[in-house]
Length: 286
Image (cartoon, rainbow, N blue to C red; front, side):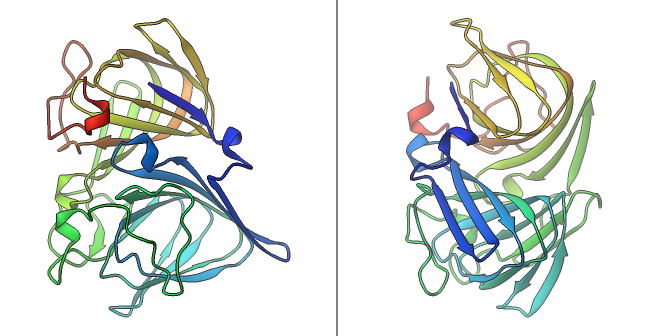
């Protein structure tokens, strides 16, 4: 099990900060390539109005808006969207795009293949290759940019082929919105659970990374008895060797990322495990 806090990474080489007068753009890599989960997670905080062009020729980038408002332009196909909290946009090697923020914003950004958290884009807004792009996004027939909205079930704006319906599930006191699954071909599942919990879990066939956005919870390693307090900015990662307990007496909201991706609709068994849906990253295998 891996547990870390955003605050502990401020001032480290995983923090990239750009300032322009009173404007600030800060990216902190809270889960990186070195963690060998098959994807990376960065916390992005923006103060003031910014605009930048990007073209991730060697990556798929998935960006979830937590707070604020921004505009995203697909410069390749001349389309644009206004995005706010609860929305996700995904871009790949075929997608030249522009992002413009209007005031302060907070995003969580994921990349596959994973970043080390220290990369900086070149003049084209491209990051140096760090691994293989997911097959569905490769080549001239690969997938292209799309946007998903939390409030509109089944709604997605995309190019590059059909996708499975957006799904919301409720189990007990937890509501989960599933944004990405295998159909999107990003190599991972992103879901956004919200609620209370007291669950014994053991993901024997997956790696799961959880980034806390609101509320507080505890996670306990049931093999050692070690327990961690989780709050906004906390990350914990579990794999096939991590029998654990998640407890949240009050509502907690977090991003949950699975590799290999879930198909959606799976039920956990008596041990708290989901059935296998692919290969677990090598470093995390039992």
